[in-house]
Amino acid sequence: MYEIVAFYLFSALTIGLFSVTVMSSNLLYAMTSLAAGMVLISGFFFLLGADFLGAVQLIVYVGAVMALYSFAMMFFDATRDIKEKNTNDALVFLLGGMSALMLVLMFSAPIFSENVQALYPMTEGVGNAQDVGMVLFTKYLIPFEVAALMLLVAMISGIILAGKKMDSSLTEDMDADDEIMIVKDEK
Image: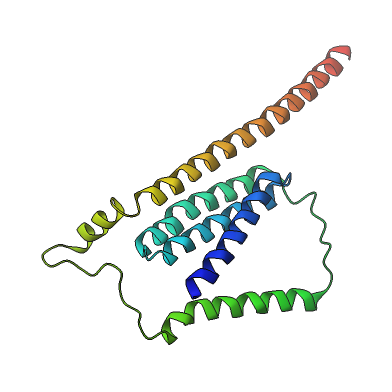
């Protein structure tokens, strides 16, 4: 029951966040929703019982997106167009409290369930890394590859977006330099 509710919740949130990533013209909003969407993708792995893949998703992919996020914040002034529209502190407090309560309920639900057991018990004579490898390359190969493909698409789109922004700023800078040189020549 909890898995079904969490799956549909994560699905709706992931689709919503990635649509914000694609449709947003603001770099800050796009990168924030991309990072949050990657965190929710790791939630799918945890729902499937692939804790190792969920941890790898969080560490590697979300870490890579956050590195891209920090570089974007260094190179672009993404906050210049942001005007805060929400002035209702009670609404912010209510939404934050509801989100915190939902997270507490999601993480405490397995504690109250009586029949929690490992999906893949350890095999005798085989180490933990070998067990993870066998499960990873049999049952969870496709989700892992899909996550890698999504990271590749995110990386390429980030490079393309940064390249377009840099081309226009370099062109503007070159025009300004040419004007300075013309003014100096006239004197």
